[in-house]
Length: 213
Image (tube, rainbow, N blue to C red; front, side):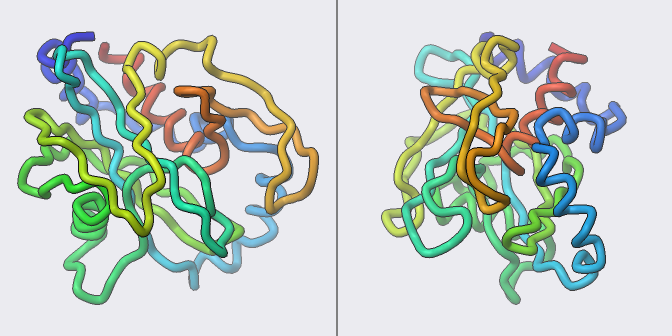
């Protein structure tokens, strides 16, 4: 979809109720659900983080969504697909400031160039004990992205058409922090399997978009 048309329609999202659990459940492996329920008591001590889901036009003016492939490191989210974002720092005024700061650090997007549409539903990540606040934003006149050499392995620029195409929803057996050879629901985007918390956030975004575009 042309980004000009997309931007005119997507602002209607501000007036919609968030589907939250109904959307998340579509992409949550059963074993993850059980672990999350067992760890409810940890929520009060969960670390805080925030991410930014950015829609932007490519050079031909077609709408894309930005994801990133994280570097390989010693951690549960090593070499996974996610949104730009990260943990709260003491200097951050609020969670939105965290998302904007991390997006600038990881992909070079100046916060003043982001048009915030709305916050999305928070999501708890049991393996790392993070409670993540996603935000939805527009990057209407994008300058070239600049990858952080330490954190970002690659940019994953997904067309809106591919993102909302139901044929890109899959089930795949994977080895995860929850166990080995587990069947998980996922998105297949640009050749990558996107699962877990990121897929659950994507599911909510997709359900919202289908109501307005």
